[in-house]
Image (cartoon, rainbow over all chains, first blue to last red; front, side, top):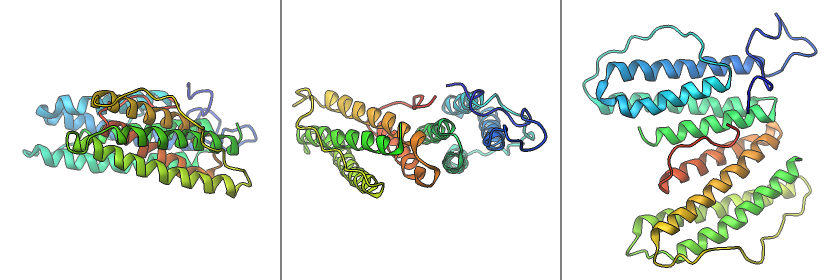
Length: 135
Length: 138
């Protein structure tokens, strides 16, 4: 399902609400930022903690796929990841961040005006939940 | 598809799930396959609870809940835990697809139930040995 027909990216609909504006435009822009942040977090952790690379790569790909569904990753502030010798702590922290993203996607799905977008966001939340089970 | 149609389809899927998971549980030895038996017991309880939720939701919108089918097509899986697991996984995947339709068809005020249950079902897929996969709508 292509998102572009459902909810254009922020900025495509003009400077403010209009009678033809997609009511989900703002929501999609917010979700893209949330997913892009999560993607950056996972990517930075994968690079900083090489032994976890295999485990984190599928999560990173998931976020990239989700972002692509909504128009592509957006720029987010660069992250500095402190070295953490205990891998379980890294995974626990990422697990908490992913849980937060999952809960946000659930709220976003409930808020969506379009049923198709609601389904897409709910499926993304379920996908994150499935990946979290492997962290 | 109206919200009521989607509720009725989801209820029909849950009725099938209750029947099939119940059957699979009955074919699974608690002593030989304790982990699988526990998973099926939990899944059975969850599907029964969701079925009852759906019956109430159908009535809330003045619908008459669809009845369970007289029988369901099920394969003989006795003594074949791998087949039991596969069948159970298939049930969960089918339910995930149905909950996806319910998410898309629900008014925002009623949507949370479908979203939460879609996630619950997706996690049960993983517990049953499934791998993360693109879920409905993607």
